[in-house]
Length: 150
Image 1 (cartoon, rainbow, N blue to C red):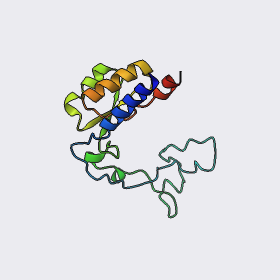
Image 2 (cartoon, rainbow, N blue to C red; image 1 turned 180 degrees about the horizontal axis):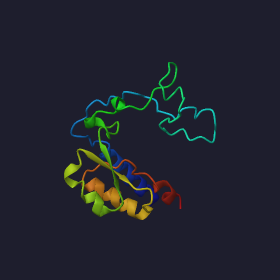
Image 3 (cartoon, rainbow, N blue to C red; image 1 turned 120 degrees about the vertical axis):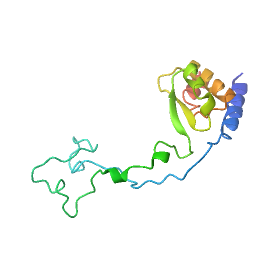
């Protein structure tokens, strides 16, 4: 029974790989690295997530020469490609089969991603239904390996 399940999974993966988005525009990123909080590299306790500088005399807030770039609206992505994954689909998080049915008419634009807290049994049902509806699943193999090992 174990080999037939593995063969079925490979068969499903093969059919899923043929799914392509309706259009796949080129994604252009204006900045490849992240904006980090000023001087976050100096202390381990400081979160590197961006914070706007507020210091009265701070050279970073005053945009002195030699300081890193600030977050600005001009670094934003193109609206048409903003949430696109590299394969051209937009991610849609799914918790159950009913939510998957929403993508029935939009399977050329959206790819479903099964939420992290969905059980292995429900995942299997979601993946099978997605295959029937020809909807791409970004994480079809999650929690599958641990179930086969038992």
